[in-house]
Length: 515
Image (tube, rainbow, N blue to C red; front, side, top):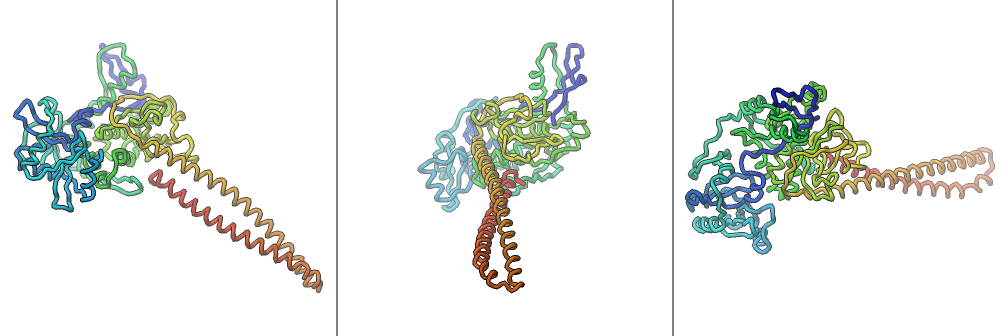
């Protein structure tokens, strides 16, 4: 469900226009390192050139920076963030380089005394960290100079996993955190690749109340501003991150950790992240209370805290999270259908309407790229003809694209299209096989009637003492029975195979929709 504008939504007051937008989506304001820089600086060693050359490591898992300090400090920090790998992986990476997903990571050779290596994100080669002094020298040799103004945009990680935005902590000293008590524990349950996952996280009721009380009306001066421009600005309100709110970064950290443990690709990590959003319950009560209008749009923190939302609320959350993964993201509005979705940058030839963005449903689980065939009370539903037109949004009406951002492309739609084609082929085969079985069943019934009629005639001959006539039909009767039994056996085998294929197909559909 999206916000529906009425004449009361836009008011001109002394040259100032108050705008409550029609179709709610938002820009992303990252309270930390900018999206463009995050993609470039993850895993890098930064040197504070305007100070005393202090060295910082930007952890690619959570985007926070860690102060390297003295050689022993740097050595301990780097090893504490290490990811265990096998001897075989180490040998392979030394020859061929580490995979892209390990760029900037610290790798620990767990089968050989935990020797540590740094994966240089520029060439993905492994550099042995050795002793503290060696590690310190290696780190500094790859240092990239950065100004204080740019550095302060990157959150500082503390020992306890909280963060700050400025300051130079001593190793072993926690960075002061914002005084917001994390007094509300929540568990987000969802499915991905047919497996169940739970992400636990604590939230602050004080932060929730602060977001809830924040403005949800956009004000500006001027008389001639386009509707699209108003929407762009209005959407941006909902992505201002309050001081002390690290919820999105914390979620991304946990999701990335799971992805790394499962050796998933970046695209799989994105799908995993979107699945969490898709499985957040749809807020039907909010839809009904608002008369099919979202008069109280949620900030991402509100959606997480309440663990529910309508299409616009859940799409805000998806946009914020996926941009933190470094992907290009956009907002897809469908005014006619009163629906919104997230768009993820993908190859143009696989994108929706050639926009360069693939469709991402947020109100229910659908594989990325798949457009829901129908909506019921604002929530996406699978259709009865599951595999036709799943990449066409024409039935949702005209599409408007807002808040486009560039970033990493998602390449998984080709595989999804292939899966849909395979499922459709299986369904078509089962439909045709069902017709074949119906014809075989009809033929068997005809044979059964012939056998029964012949047996009745033979019984009559036998009962009347016409044994010669009875004997004359025995061979014909036996041939008919043998043919019937043979055809029945073949029919049963075909039915058994058909039923197995039906079970396999139903399971594949269930897996496709994560049911």
